[in-house]
Image (cartoon, rainbow, N blue to C red; front, side, top):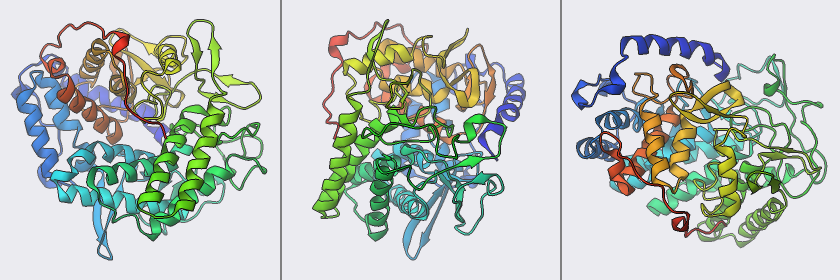
Length: 495
């Protein structure tokens, strides 16, 4: 089922849940909360390390509602979306997004990445994530322009009757998004760094990574439009591309064209800035893997040279905003046109430090962040219960739990972190889980009651607060002062 079809269905379903359990957001004893996590016998995958962490957090944090939410949300990917097996003696893991029975390269990476630090304590968890890397490589080899795939490589897409593109068997949806190829690099790189395991970096990985670089270069569109085009018979303008399926033109300048956003909505202008920043970081990580694991200096140089080319082009895209100063736009076309906004889907402008694509102390990023978290961003919405970034994908006046979690994860201000925790705690609509989007004045109205990425990201945020700011997990959430800007530091390199 297409994601848009959940807008009305899940909102109505959520209302039924909330009416039955309207008091949960005010309870403080953990035993008073209902059991909403899927029963043990029905869970898809069990990690001893994840269960041990859940037990530890539940025992040690004072805010029992957040502990309950962590118990439900952090393992949700493992409980409900993972299909792990061995193929020819090697791990293979297919990961659905939740309520849609397909595997997105983006979502599957985001869903399992928070578990990586636990792999050293859990060999089975490590093997499961190795299986995700192997499955992603297979998907990229099928079609590097596709964003979502079926487990059955012979299955034909439900979109085959409406989509005018080169739709191959095994592909669920073929929307070209830069981030679809960045995320598998991110997962493989951090898997290697956390475990030291190079088992998944085989010939399939090498073939897939060569296709990634080839596809990025094609979509710089220096020598014509490239091989990709896409149109769909649909009433949603954001589900199709104009001008013969190639989208609105961009003036070649070194940036990579992305015809769709991580929301799976069409871009307005082809140079999607957050995704190009993500590509720079991912290509730098790929170059390091080619050098150290692949022992291929030529491939490493090709990836690093492309990263530098895109990075140089990104230095030319900043704009001077009359209120916020120099900021990054969301999209450009190389001809001078810009789109000033942000979308809660990741990569976003807000999420750039989370992806290690910019330093959190970067002055332009901080200006951009102030813009994104203001009503000058047309997709930032305020209500009586919460505020945050939404998305054209879910319409006006609906904000995303992912956006609130990401705001907390990228913040250097303890007061802001506390505010994000409180907004997340108070907007689960009695379900015990995070959702896609919700009405900031009436969280009872929400979309997607089963969205594993949103759940796991919330768990990652709580875990970070547990390690770094445990006082924020007391009950009630304490009043804290803002962190002085002078303490906003970073020790990363971009590429």
